[in-house]
Length: 363
Image 1 (cartoon, helix red, strand yellow):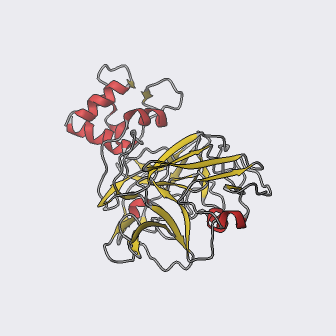
Image 2 (image 1 turned 120 degrees about the vertical axis):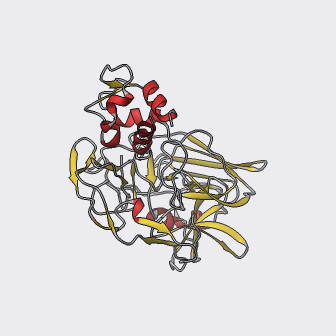
Image 3 (image 1 turned 45 degrees about the vertical axis):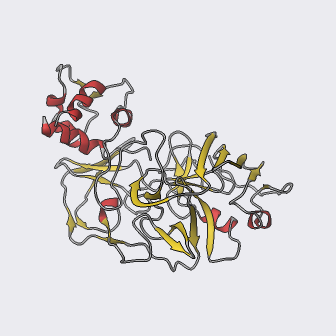
């Protein structure tokens, strides 16, 4: 059963959860309520309380300080122009999300990198989520997590390095171009958001702070590899590590200015930087933070290791194309397909949640 557990875990580690567009003008409003007018935004203290509303985009984001928590209530509609959605690489439409986020006002630095799927939220209420749901699966057992910023698979990103999840959630995978422009106060460091552990997120216009990630030497392995969404595409993963996949990179301590979570201490203040180079946005947090609920497959930690055990319900949701709550032989791929008969305990030619859980728990 050890091999069954391995098969389930490998596939689970390859599953993540991974934007309607209009172009409008902006208009300002009263003090402490701000549209994306550059003057009103640039003169605001985003470490305090603020309202950010834009009737033309429907944006409503309100931040209040309640004790030791910074509470953001937002409908998660971007307050800026986006690309056209749906598009050929992203079939989804931006929709209201109605989210409430809480960030510590006085964050506590721990110094231990903890992997997170969603590291933080921009000042306008749009979440940062650098990882993707896209996985290339090889019949020889390898799984490769596709990076959003690459040239092999079109994920429909717009000029803000963002696109839309099936839920309608518009989110940033890389430098949020419009946020940087709108919130630029004239300094090199542009405050763009808050991480979930409470530390601020910035972008350096000069790019002088470099990440400490490097491309791996050598070539990738894997044969008969495919990428599947609404159709299946044959993908060749052979060749050198060029940044197409997250596993192409490794963290090399002190090789750059930033730590494993793309963080740095400047003038005594710890912060995370959004960069134009991998990892683009922090994939982990250094502060005191506990996720309120499981966030899908745990992915690759910043130090190159694997995260905790992933969520089987999300595996079924991702692979269950006919939405009958179970997986057929035609729906599974890779190692899970190879060990299908071992996991299918009642031999009914379907894998249920209970069977997958039993397969994962047996070591």
